[in-house]
Image 1: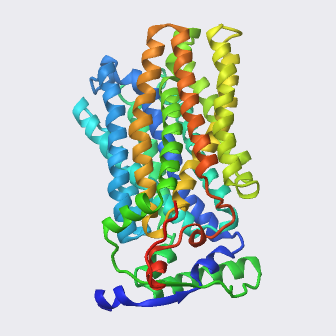
Image 2 (image 1 turned 135 degrees about the vertical axis):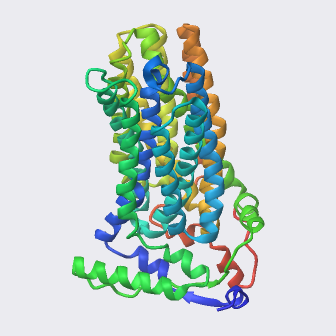
Length: 492
């Protein structure tokens, strides 16, 4: 079929309703494992670099890096992640979810493999840039695909569980560091290289599962490939029916779209940030809030315990594991409430709740009450809530914009949040900790709490009631408006 024919065809489809009414099955587990485990990779990556940082500066490491080089490598990773998210986010909306989630994972595996063989700082920087680009691209490709394949009634809890698995990777990275950095078992030039090799092995395993995850039928039918979309959904339904023994009645809900082979970037940008200005403000507030406090605390937690509580570097990973497990429990235990109690109440509650708990945390720290175990207890409670809220930020921007802009919207807000909060947070916390002044460190905590509170207030003002609703009812696809003969209505 010619591009001109595709651009002018109008079709009616029941594919979204057919996907949303499916009972949970092995297919959904394959999606969960094949796509969701990317967050484990990111948690493993970020934590591993922090854990092996000291080793990379030692004379026998074989890479010859300074403390300044470590900071530079972290900044380069973030830059790569932001640029990768924007580039691959646009390509994901244009060329499909599956092509790009295979490309981005391949890039991650190759770059991580190269990192393990770094022999000079410049090569390490280059490898970290492309590793970040792969991870950033994964966010946009993966979150858009997951939301378009998971039934609406459980989309919230599944997204939160998937995003929360970042902390499973973080805990694993800290635990592995205890093994790979033990000089009694491995020489100092080898242990850190094997640590990065774990990421390669995990990435290759994920790729084997991911090959069996289909392209998003929602993306296919809008881009003139409705026959492929129908065939994929037919296959999924047959597998689900055979596995569950349930009769799948044909849903009544239909969607009429005008197919487009390509959708101009200017149309995507106008729709995401002009037609939906209130939703854009919400996305920015949620992402900057979580990126600021998370990057600030996570990157500097070991330094905080070492400087003010004299915790040895060998014991720091234990505190990082406790911190990571607290963050993991938040999305796992609260996730279902985002589908039942609702998005608005839970997102605002977790953002504002974590900000409020930071107040007694700061008092305990500045008055030097108790010891390091009391402080980590307050930190765990604070980030138990913050983690669920932060995971919901990704869920929010992936479901409140039209399907044609979904991956780019995820990429944009991730990039803005990471570039703003992800850089400012570590700089502020790092400088305050370096001062040795407990009062200044508390100021950093309270600034982080204030930024989180702004995110919570933005959710109260501009939040969207998206629980258990189809993606198409939350944000009408551009091609639906075109099929109905009008433009996209101002939605706020």
